[in-house]
Length: 85
Image (tube, rainbow, N blue to C red; front, side):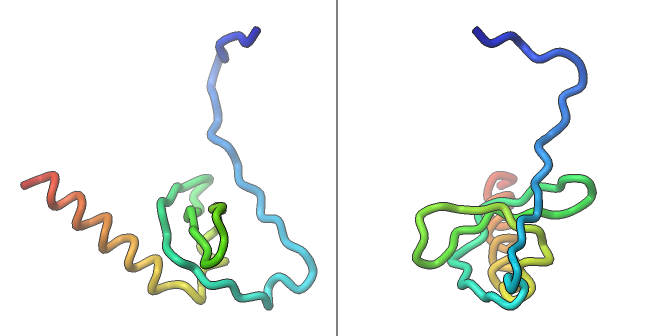
């Protein structure tokens, strides 16, 4: 049986997994779904073109997908604006 956690619980730390040559790979981002700040670093939950699974990516990995990140913030801002009205 599981027991409840005690003490200070730290959020998960996402590790940057890189293989040789990855820095040259470019994948098409379908959309950004969410974001989270971990240890003063922004991570984005990304849906990739042609893949069912999503991944959490650090901001540095999305340099070629800045427009998708901006679209996410624009849509998130519109959703917040609708809730205020």
